[in-house]
Image (cartoon, rainbow, N blue to C red; front, side):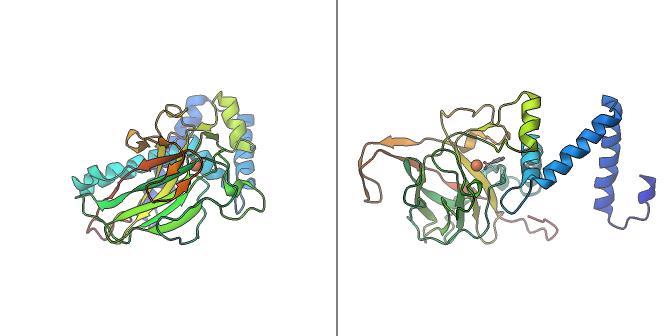
Length: 289
Ligand code: BEZ
Ligand code: FE
């Protein structure tokens, strides 16, 4: 730690000093053996080697160790300290996960994210995006992604293009609406080193059904979050610790017929209503959010 005396970046020095201190304390606490340290290095090597354009095993490692969610929680606590009271009523954030794919198509409001033949029961999502004072945010961007009705993401299928992804903007009243599927529970990828780790830990790899959204608007703190279906399995044991009660929504089931947007459905469908609230950006120029 003393050898960092020439470090010119105080934040980097603070982080690295603490990292070294905690790492050494951990090694002493578990009395780590050389072959265990080698196994750890091999595990991290394999984790890096499992990463490619479509797979991010390190994010998965961070998620399954609860580190991603801890960082999200720290960010929210910081917002409460800096921007309170408005941050308290902002929609809660959760993990991004490894399946975000930048560059989803820009779609019209009310569009259907389902490509022909995609597995899953139809669900109509609608609501508004407001600031924390309840003022509608026109032109707010929703970047939406999910797996299909069997829990499979497009990125997990070799050669498949983007499916169940899209970006749309709220109307002049801050309202949004789109069709997608009712998500189902699914396992995080288990065919790599993180899957081996979970198994050795005696943990299941399941996530409760959810749809992902990034919601953003000029002058507001961008939000990365999910909506989870009420009553779904694994809400109390999400493999990545991402569930927040405020993000659990009702999927209201309807018999075939005319949907709220006038569309006729020949099969049962669901409706979901959820309003997103974004915190105004603090005036602090050093606030990286
Ligand atoms: C997901 O929801 O897409 C996800 C999040 C964390 C780890 C694996 C998957
Ligand atoms: Fe997901």
